[in-house]
Length: 148
Image 1 (tube, rainbow, N blue to C red):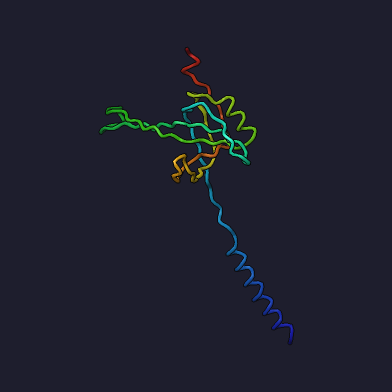
Image 2 (cartoon, rainbow, N blue to C red):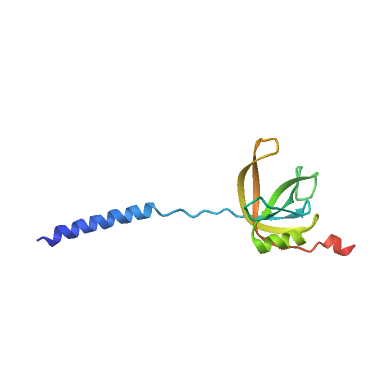
């Protein structure tokens, strides 16, 4: 006679706890970037006092398209848009390899994540910056330079 109410209370408690537990489960998300382009400047290594050094360089990616009525016959003008990306490398091994081997004009593939941050410039103006935090870099052969 006493067992029934105790079990009912126990089941209600367990059900309530499981509902709370599922509401605390965090959703998965993804912040992933893949870029293939050419390096715009030789990398620089910077270090702010008390922080780890970082290798920074720019990477250009190009988007090309044809304007005109019939793309099947390759009629129309070719348009191109270049987008510049700021790449930051914090990982110790990769940071040093990037600083040593990434060169202006090199064709590379970068994997990483997008980071939005703020900094204060030398005129004491607060600025926003978008950076790609690289966690993998693949050096690609440059066929145009190999033929020369």
